[in-house]
Image 1 (cartoon, rainbow, N blue to C red):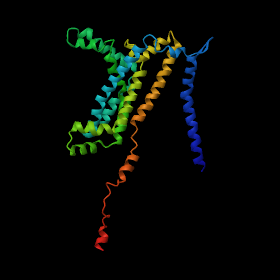
Image 2 (image 1 turned 60 degrees about the horizontal axis):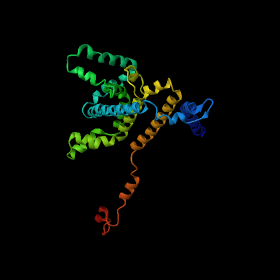
Image 3 (image 1 turned 30 degrees about the vertical axis):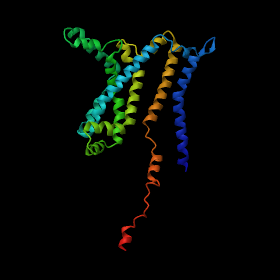
Image 4 (image 1 turned 90 degrees about the horizontal axis):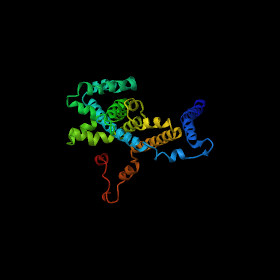
Length: 298
């Protein structure tokens, strides 16, 4: 009985410490944004966010980069993971190691490598058709090089989310059942496997979106201004506005997390099952129930 009574106390203490660890910095940031020395409490920092110079452009660019990164990550990982599950399970450790490498290499080292590769364009490929490709991926309006960099950085997070979803379902059985019903392999994956991975796909998409929204190193060192870089640059002149945007982005990220969690939650089919399990009056047979075989033999 003593152990049973101690567990809730420890859980409450751990929850309290974790809540304070997350909420105290957020509360301090909110107080900093609304408390103006000499003026008292005001919401000018939040009311001026939409009209701030560069806010809409940087946010729109980051959302476009996030959407492209999510699509590219899914196109790379989902077919690879499904193919490994179905045809080459021995390659699964190899794929896991490859997807986990960005966790080992620092972002600064990655940016140094990207810069070296991008310098090949004007130095070695100026007279080849690839020079136009190097120029296009560095366009300021939509720097596709950031999408490639974000995709590499998001591989470990998206891999863990998708791998957890694939562990929860038997992909081979689902595909074989769909093929036995006459479906082709691509159709079996699209219409049978992917609906069962809805939660994993949403989790991977959310993690990728959160990474793109908060990533600063790559965009700053390559000379672009996505949302995180704009927040840091704005903080030099308008500190309260920068912190207010950070707090607002944190709240929006939490709301998106709740939305993705609600969308990924399996539907409650208990009511539908209870309704379908009870035959209606029209479906009930008018004849009496068949006599068991043992009674007929007797």
